[in-house]
Image 1: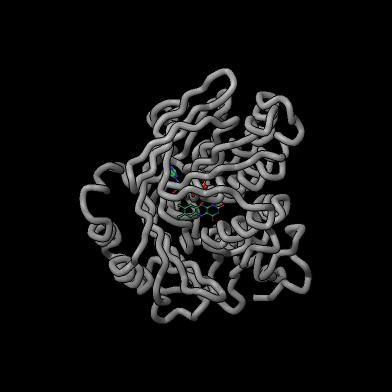
Image 2: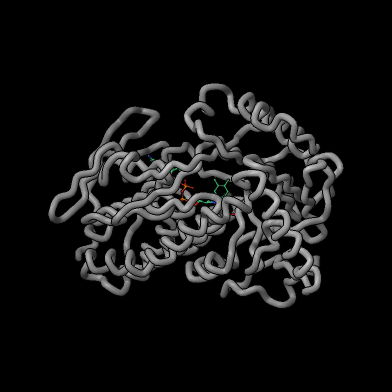
Length: 405
Ligand SMILES: Cc1cc2nc3c(=O)[nH]c(=O)nc-3n(C[C@H](O)[C@H](O)[C@H](O)COP(=O)(O)OP(=O)(O)OC[C@H]3O[C@@H](n4cnc5c(N)ncnc54)[C@H](O)[C@@H]3O)c2cc1C
């Protein structure tokens, strides 16, 4: 392959896109990134990073750049049916000692790592509108939103890292209806400008009822984030009014202050995500010189708790496969996909069960969930509880960085 053949277009500057740009750089490719937003994102919703994600961060050389925000003194409060809150098990009590961050923290760590590797050309406010494959290149028409100018460029590889409603997927593989598996659920995620009244600075709370739930995630050094998630048989009907009106109806009667506070704060929030819950299921993630990575290819959805980790894994492994097969792109992409698919399939299956943890499917599931978490909480209290506060280069947590909670 010539140097021209090794110019790769990466669509999307999210976790998958930046991780892929790092992987490409390490494999001797030149990444050119287009991002439809006018600038890089910051902040965002709570993300837990589990051992697979820590390993991917380490493999990308980004572990030391990650700012971890695990609460040191906070408690997670479980709200019961009576509306009374008791100390309970939170997301961070899951096995694997997850890191607590917001999405922007991961993107920042990866961005700094990419810059350390020489960076990449990034074009903001730009998106692809056509992708055509020839035997030797992928020809992409790019639209610059601000001016309306279009250019056509050729690349050795096109990476669609543009999220669950990927435009590259539509252009190169087909319409959403062929690949999007819509679940009967809605999420609304946003940052709280102020902590819930009555909660400690780093506290979180979970009010998980039959078919609707409100989560608050506390951090050591920033204000909390909220996640409202509920089940509905009429997904389209949830988008006919302003989200806050819909949510006020759905959450009527849930009286814990965390719910009222979250809804009030949502009215003021400069940014929020209000969306249906989907998975992306595709028989293959690559075709010729086009490959999809992250949510664009395999969105497992938030309930899996693994989307960020696998987006990083995808970028890191793509770089490794290109290094292993420097002269054979087809072999590299096939090996990459074969290596990743079993883990992704497993996480997609487990997401259904994990959904019960986030938002029980009915009154029985609500009681089972509460009972299981009570037992796990009791077991957890017998064991010594430690939480990581800082990662090391290899993704492992040094003993000095563990704090009891
Ligand atoms: C509420 C919530 C909680 C979550 N919690 C966790 C968790 O605890 N742990 C975990 O591991 N994962 C979690 N996830 C999942 C995780 O956030 C995603 O899997 C991950 O961010 C996917 O990254 P991505 O880069 O593939 O896609 P995205 O984050 O969607 O990024 C896509 C990028 O592409 C850009 N783009 C889109 N279209 C175009 C276009 N046409 N042209 C150019 N650019 C474009 C977008 O602007 C964006 O920058 C959660 C998700 C949600 C919604």
